[in-house]
Image (tube, rainbow, N blue to C red):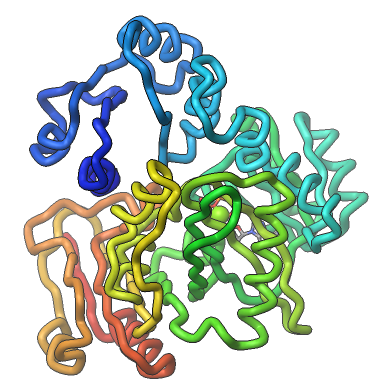
Length: 392
Ligand SMILES: Nc1ncnc2c1ncn2[C@@H]1O[C@H](COP(=O)(O)OP(=O)(O)OP(=O)(O)O)[C@@H](O)[C@H]1O
Ligand SMILES: [Mg+2]
């Protein structure tokens, strides 16, 4: 988020920030790039934020209202509508936020989505499961970070899962799509992608999220001109059209099934999380933080999007609880990678472990890039298996 503020300032915008962080706790560089900042007590309370921000900005003209954080896309759209600022409306934003509405709109455009139903009670979930069949997925209607997301094999398992999602007000019950999972990322101007990216998840987030021993890997694909990838890109373009995208980042997830079909997963009107924007930057040696800002402020995109590398990130999870005590295999890994290692952001010895169930960042990451896909995959997997962190 700091980088986007920097990007906006660099293309000539005066940036006024709103957040729940106390101003003195903002990072130094953000303070430098902000022309003003309002701290609000409850950033998730849309009505309250709208009242406070409107009072704060009274008498000043705003040209854009922007957010790159999923939980705030509706709030930003409501502010735009209230002030008559160009950009996505709240109804359009809802199509990128509400997973049932999203699938309805995408399906209405003739695109392949998982069969699904929304449910607010245990009996509605059971009825939906009956209708859809097993295996299926139960997940929040407006979720993020794979929280409260479960694969369910049969009716007995469904009963157990019902207990675990009781606190979720509304869930989506979906046909489970077998196959590999990929992203489709864009920056759009007027709904048309001026930048496109595809990355592989290894393994699927739902698996990476449920097994601590896994070191999740994500690799951007250098060569987008492969039939399987093209199908995902075509699907993605159709999705953006169906949902009425306008300016900014999008992050879609899709499945590539064993039969070669591309099936829609979900999409957000914001960049992907974790480090996917830096990975895209390393893929082409560009600065998408700034190019995004140029796109949303000036309707222009100037970076050369030639793809030189496949960029892989491997998130690590230490064995044991508490503080990192020891890291093994790192020197050998560094030697093996040489100049292809672009980031070593493992937590240092002495640091407290992060909660891997709450953040994909886990206990840090290693990032590599390589012009050859197979070598990029080998290096990313070597980071997964040969580098180990121990906590105690
Ligand atoms: N219909 C489905 N079939 C197969 N797998 C699914 C399905 N729906 C969700 N999943 C799995 O669950 C994961 C999380 O679901 P989804 O992406 O909808 O939720 P999320 O919480 O918004 O995710 P995140 O913020 O991590 O991207 C997906 O990445 C995928 O691995
Ligand atoms: Mg997702």
